[in-house]
Length: 102
Image (cartoon, rainbow, N blue to C red; front, side, top):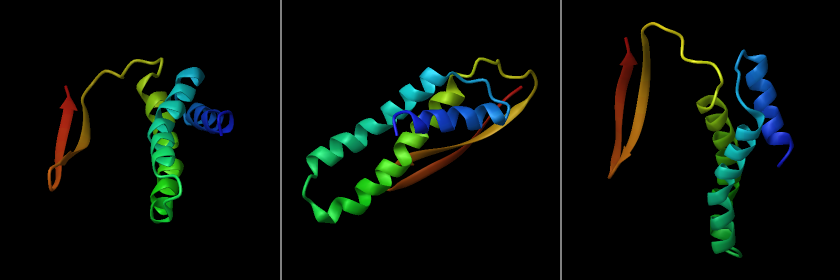
């Protein structure tokens, strides 16, 4: 996992035209693994938490690697307008937003 996951994320990003950094992608995988490691240690032996732990181990390291690859790309944002969408958790729900650049 320590070698294959960042390599797969990096090569996929490069094949799709990205220009990220392999080592920062690996750092993102490690950062995404912190919470699953802590919870796996804290919930050791708890059969009810097994599904949650599997879900966290499958999603968070990949999300961390992709996030770091995309965030630390070597290319600058292209000039011109851009629009994006955001989601933020709130107490009892979530908020949706639209952001942009001119």
